Length: 224
Length: 344
Image (spheres, chains in turn green, brown):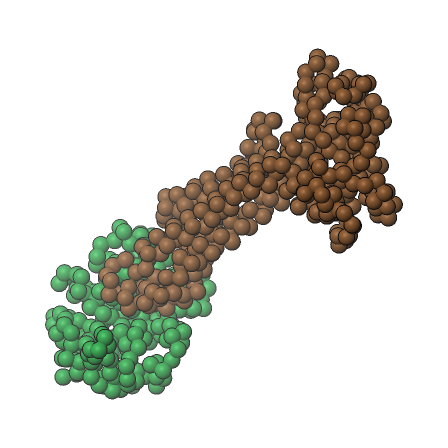
């Protein structure tokens, strides 16, 4: 079942009199529970495509349909609400809140997504995810005391704790070595399959493609 | 908002620095305000302790009460028409005590009124500050223009004028010393509108205080310092939160990306501002009250609860404005920009 589709998406950047078309009519569908990877050379438009799909920047033309609702025509507050409740994000860097412990990072995400659960259930949910990412023993640690791999695992846990419908991952392994990259990809694959989360991921690392269901190759703003 | 408190807990030093600066600035403001109020009392307690009303002096006096002479017929007419109206005169002068030591006082005489002490000829009622200097009830005081002598009848609290203790004397004694029949001033208590009395100029309590030599200059300079300190504290808040926000631009961007509302980020900043300000103000109010107790007795320091509350509210409002203006950049933060900037 298609949960997410992109229809004739275009993005043009204007710099003075210069106009540069970064996305030139992209069509793409994501099937529920599957991982799709966008690959391509630098400047091919894959990160721009991901950020527009995630509602982080507007499109110049075309549609982004999530559950048949066009998010490109929504107000910024409506898009924020969808980002908070229906989407999860993992970036190249973990981007954790420096003054919150691992446990508090996940609790914050539950607050942001307005998940209505009591304290007991909240603890169970957080402990379950921390167990899945192998950080049960680090739940009271602050980001400053975590390794790069541990930080990224916390970022993944934060991205899925509220059980989003779609996970957007922009180069999630770019700052890690090969061994840790494989661990992270394995974790993303494991969690998204278990929780039935649809994933759109940008990567430049061909080795990571073995963990995904579909590969979409891009070049010069087009799917090739 | 717990995230605001968690940030304070994790960054104790950073917030303590802001808190201590606010504490010091607000303490200094309270102390200077206490001094301004104390000096004001020392300069004009006699007038400040009168109820709201209207003062009248001769138009030709050019707002100088010393030169004012109110015609007897006008005075009698107003005292007859207006309930509680009083005519009075004030002149700076000297008294010699039993050891022939000269004391500077403000001689005051008045018609019958509950607002002014009434004394018999040859008697004198003095401000309490002279008792603290060693005078006693029954002491005899002399004046070189007064043939007889004054016997101290009692002491009264908070009766000062132009930084001198007030000496209430009988009208006859006053006339003998200053050789004038007319009273200088008229006072009618009450919030009613000013009466137009031919030949007289009217003043509100506040306006009349400003006719006292040195009063407005003294108060203006101290109040200017107080307001300057308040503005400084507002700027401190603005600068501090601006610096903090600049450092946290990336974090705000990420929080926005994951769906945190901009209003929640503002609430976080306001919570921190309120926490730091209330804590600092509580400490500085406590310290200023302590200063009230340990300050030397002859220091004119008088900080009222009303002034403390007013200044505290002004600090909170200024802090709120400073933090909010600096926080406007939060509104402009683009999540995408923060993501592309790298690790926060």
